[in-house]
Each structure stands twice: as C-alpha cells, then as structure tokens.
Image 1 (cartoon, rainbow, N blue to C red):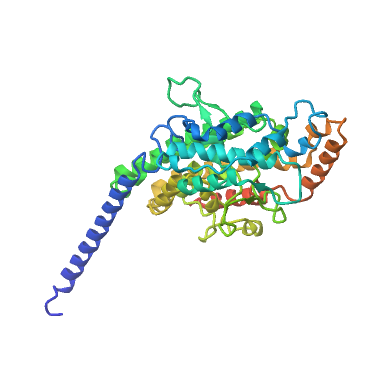
Image 2: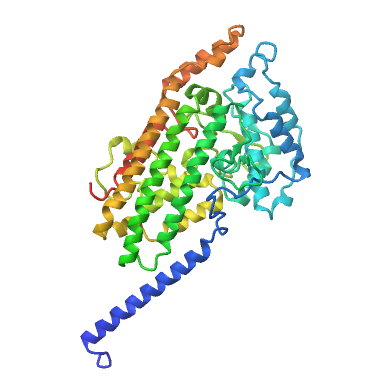
Length: 474
C-alpha cells in the first residue's frame, strides 16, 4: 500500500484509466461497426437498402427446367380446391396434375455451380420456393401431410443453408427479389419497378407486392438514420444531441409515410381477392393451427428442423431494424408501463425473433449487430431534450401498428367469415359448391390465423402494445 499514490490521486488515476478503457472500447466498437457495416458486408445497398440494386439474373442453363416450370405455373395454376372439378367444368382450369407429375419425374440437380454467386443463390431460392408453393397448394385438399418431392426439397434446403434462411417462400422471394425494371437503363426506384411472379395472375397481387416494396424503399432513409446514430463520435455532446433530435424528426416522418403506404393497399387490392385467391398460396406448413399436418420434404433428413411458416410482413428487415433502434420490447423482458394485458401475455413473444430466420442470413447478421449497439432509447431517457422527439417516433410506430391491425381485420378477420365466390359461382360443379361451404365453416370457426398459424389479432395487438410501452413520458 505504501507504493500506491495518495487516495485522491489514486482515484483520479483510476477514473482516467476507466475512461480511457471505455473510450478505447467505444472506438474499437465504432471501428468494427464501420468496417462490418459497409454497404456490401451485409448485402445492403446505400440507395436501395435491402433490395439488390439490380434484378436477379436468370439461372444457368443446367437449371433451365426450374425456370421453365416457374414460367409455366406463373399466374396459371389454380388452388387445389378448384382443380377438384377438372378442366371440363371450370373454364380455363389448367391441368396442374400434369405440371406436378413433370416435377415428380425430375432428378435432384446439384447446386454446386451456384456456390460462389450470391445473386444466383438468391434466384435459385426464389424459383424453388415459388415452385414448392405452387406444387403444394395446387394439390387437391387432403387431410394427409403434403409431400414435397426431393427434386424441389433437396436443392431448396441446400440453397437455404448457403443463404442462411428458411427453405420456404419468404418476404424476400415475393418482394425483395421478385421484380424487374420497367426501364432497364434506369436505376431501381419506386416508379421503375414491376413484379414478375404471381400466384393468382391478378393486378391485386402485384399491387400488394408493390405496396410492400414502397415501404421497404421508404425505409432506406431509416437505415441511414440508424447508421448515422451508430457512427456519432459521442452521443452526449451538443452537436450530436442536435443531430439526433433532427434525425428523430426525420424518422417520425418516414414512419408516418410507411403507414400511409400500407394504408394505400386498400384502394388497389380487393380484400376478397386477397383472402381467397392470393393469401392461400402464402400459407406454410401448419398454417391452419396446431392440428394441421406439416409438410414433408422428401430426401431431407427428418431430424433436421425446418422453418416452414411462409411469407409474412413480419419478415421485413426494415421493420425489425426500426424496432431494434427504438428498443421495442416484444419479448416483455423489461418492466415498462402499462403492464402487459392477459391477452398480451398469451401472445407468441418469440414471433419477431423467429421471423428473422426467414430473412437472408446477411440481413439477420446486420440486425444482430444493431442489437449489440448503443440504444437510442437509453440516450433519450438520459437526455431530457431528446425525450419528446423519441416519443414522437415511437408514437408514429404505434399508429402504424394500429393501422396494420385495421388492415388485417379488413383483409383477414372479416374475410374469413365470407364465402369464396369463385367456388360457389361454379354452380354447375356440385363439388365446388360443397368445398365452398366447407371452407366457409372451417375458416369461421376458430380464430383468424396468420400464414404461419399464429392467432393474428392477439399477435398484432401484442406488437402494438409493446410499441406503446416504449414511450418515455407515459
């Protein structure tokens, strides 16, 4: 003890050392963040965000049968219940049985030629995932578990391993990768994008994808705001606080714009068409609830756990980044007010985290990095001048989720109590009319579910309430 400095000097030096260590760690973190968050490190483009900057290329000739099968199915196959009547009773009803038989006759193709090309792997995932959904949902209704042939299942699982994402149709397959440029000589923008693949062949379906794309493109500014915050030299100094306040105001406007974009779908996508002609194609394994038989991927080890829920807006990486940035507690891990309701407690608290497994792996890694960075909620809570700006952004997100609940009620909950007109109208086909009545009864009995099988109303309300609890001035 005699060789130590006097207590005041000792503690002064100790504080200096601690601050030095913290500063060093902060600089290392920022340096690592800057290095790892370069635009291409996580397949994020500065101008297009989670969209690739250019359309995906077609697969090499060795995979031509995949591309041809998708082209033949695109907007032409019918849902399985329609095929019960056969071509002679429903005008234009295609022979999907022959289409499926062709796929069942394929051998398994090696994906080795795709290993070193990210865009071709993404294209392969898109093509195979769409083919799986076309295959399963064009089958006649059955109580047995659908069998996905090895010619689709094996390469899809292998491609998915390379991309670090689920081997099923995802938000990326329907929105982020499913487009082409109207004017190929111009860059991707909100007015220079059109969607290629559809299940129903309707403009309603294209408009649904387009609204999702507009929201993602508007979210590019959100990614820039998050990036700017994480690269501030010190969030506690006056210039940084001023910038954070301005950026939170920009963030609020961006969130409000996304809310309006989501709401705009009401004028371009008919709820009945969406529910009965589009949405059934999105349903994944177990979509009808816990008693629904799961899909079987032939040729894939049965012990390998597979995520097979199907596409969902919950897989939007932009919305996840926003939740992480504002520190929305979907898991109810923190004590916040008001206390969760009994309905909130019944919700699937792991839903949002599970949805990340359906994102491209690089996007999920980006979100994991954000999760470990400094929380803007912590900065706002400890900086009184930022609280109002932070609360405004959170309030805007809560309103967005309120609006999403209304959209879901209109497009899913209300429509689940209606009759599929396109079946009932086929009066010359008694089988179709019977199936229509059975579907109407089945879909009206239990709670409306998302495409992954969750009780939709409970899930969405829990997300809205978790957002509200992030507000600092309750």
